[in-house]
Image (cartoon, rainbow, N blue to C red):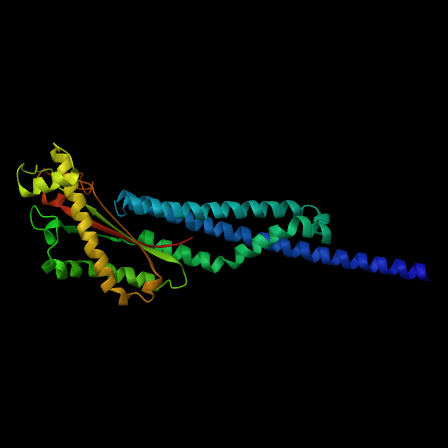
Length: 303
């Protein structure tokens, strides 16, 4: 009688274990399937974003430094997908053998992989929001071109205090767009990237003039060439405009719902006598279309 009871207990225990194993296998298989579907959907979203970036870069609709940041973000997201794909592959390998899901084997070998699948799925809402923000950043024409004359007198690289209101007014449309996007994503850690790029024409700067002497002192070169002079001039004007932009951003803080939590990255540089836009094919040396500053911006997620 005792032997029968023991045998019955063993059989019942085995059946319960087998039943538990089958449930665990079924649940894991479903998680693997769901995760694969999410990976495929995310891969399509990333491919679409990469295609849009190539279009935008071809139209010069994004600054090269911002392009690098966006490409880096897309690459990181793609790497994350590759890693979770490897996890799915490992889980599918374990699913091939039932004994892998028996209690001891499951705890030692499989469970950590399943936990990663759960974590990936729990982050789906956040990933979707990140993709939405990137989609806005990639598709929006987030740059504005200004003639240098709107801010600087000829031969001057400083903005007069009396011109600040004009500068402020010029940048407000971009700041309005920037704040609108930022305010739509309070749940995502994000950074506002602002880039000022200055250009100059190819007109030589006359030796002996005040501007010539100031640029020569700035470059600390005994005999600077015209190309170097115009490079320095475009640098200084971009820097000056950025200095004013920082003030404007602070005075516009109320437009951002959580300005103190928003990271802001500023940068500026000059491109000297480089031609601003490749779709214009009839530039001349002394061409006002070359005396421009371009303001690029993007609200990008922090990963």
